[in-house]
Image (tube, rainbow, N blue to C red; front, side, top):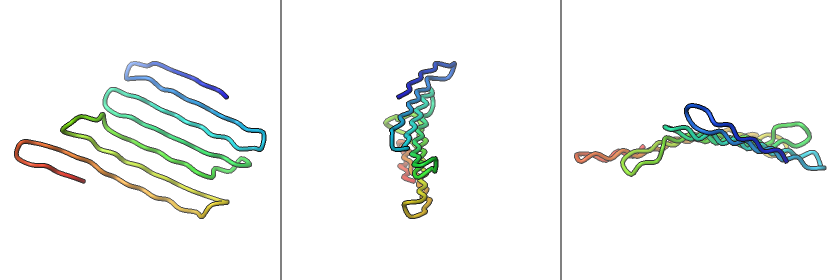
Length: 98
């Protein structure tokens, strides 16, 4: 297991890497910035990227937030790529859901 934390001018980055004896590796990357959050997760088996996930989100406020995700799978799972996007905006005269 490997853990890293890096502070920079716009937030903090956390990275975790787990390796097992049966050639499975998991990498997590969490980047907390002042105006957004980025979460990345990769699962490798036998040095092949089996699952990859990315989540991007604005800072959650009661009146505004946006979320984007991307999930990719590869062998031995079925090959797929799924993207989603959602959001919420509230103003006194309107509410918008994406």
